[in-house]
Length: 132
Image 1 (cartoon, one colour):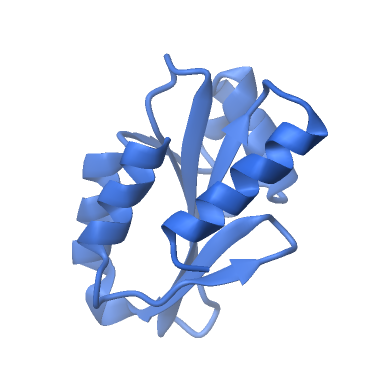
Image 2 (cartoon, one colour; image 1 turned 45 degrees about the horizontal axis):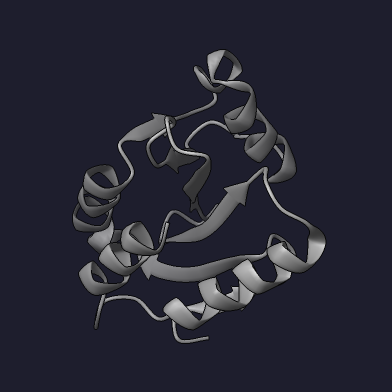
């Protein structure tokens, strides 16, 4: 997880600014649509699985759980996930704004293992990787 997150952080250095989204326990960045091709290409390289409203219903249970936690994908929204063979997943939402001028991405961790205290420790480490 850390390797994937640091890879993303390095790729977006100087391009995106991160803040904490308490609602979803993710890091959040917003950018103008003029940057969408480059940002999407980076996400596709680092998080090779892409889900949308047409295929997420056929995704593995753990991906559908993430989708449900985030409120479900609407047309135009995407969910990127890391290698599904690993215990823990890194995921990223891609949510275009209604005005067509900006996109929000949220990067988070999904790990079905561990206690609440281990999850809290994992969140603290995750936030520190992104400088939050």
